[in-house]
Image (cartoon, rainbow, N blue to C red; front, side, top):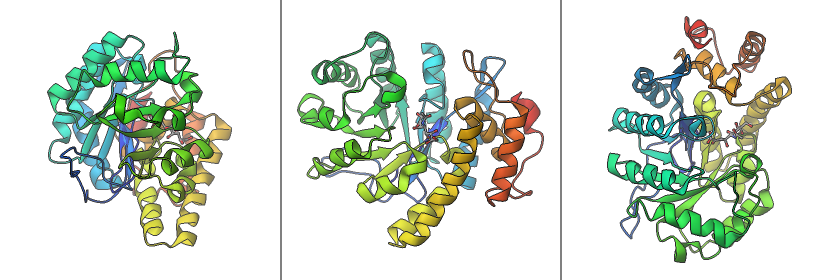
Length: 349
Ligand SMILES: CC(=O)N[C@@H]([C@@H](O)[C@H](O)[C@H](O)CO)[C@@H](O)CC(=O)C(=O)O
């Protein structure tokens, strides 16, 4: 899936897009560690899954699409939108490799999600990400046998981070899906003492009090605060989000980048217009039933690149959903007839 950290580059999942739009401005920290540029959207990178198998051959094409058509140059691979947790370890390695290889000299950053229920598997993926030259790794909380305290969660994350000691490390906070409700603000307190490579947070939750406190209590640090609720991004930007990673940046990356630009120019009224417009679309699809499967259908529709159906236990989106989403995109002027690429829908079914 794609999502984008804001801060001048977006991302997707095929990657989830990760931050947004512009060329990276500050790729190096004074301590020599690379950090994501601020403001921009990223997509979660995804891959074209067909008949349950991964169609690696579309990833290169999708990199070009994201860069040229959506202005997204940062990718978050194997996250939620990318169904990373539904893939085998071997598939996750191959997807990561393909994104890094095809993104070379085209993408600013490729961050690989390496979270897993097994610490061993997570470490293996982290090590692999380092070997292939990824720009960072991210980890969700293990969600079956769960860590119940901040210290236990940190210990788990620390063991994974230690397997890739040269790579920037992000905690992927997505409590609605993991069921691990430890507040991000609590987790961040003193985290760099335990995890020296800690780089930032991918915050996929609607608790803006928690998010705001993460920013407020860490002003001295140069952390990346990557927001993951696309329909609330503007509010998070006001609170200090430095980037965004989300599923919709796969197809609304350009629109979101326009919002980021308006925000940077301090044209709040224009930025709000963009956010409301994006909200109108998300609100519409949420009422129809919106998740990873529906995201994939929209990605196929808008990009013309077959993303394939999702893997079980997900079910592919209905034709009715895709038709309604297409009509809404057109009515909001997110999609003109010329934007629509032919021949993609069948390939996705
Ligand atoms: C639960 C979920 O899938 N959240 C999405 C959002 O982008 C979400 O689709 C969007 O805000 C619409 O609600 C991202 O946070 C997930 C994400 O970045 C990922 O694919 O890893």
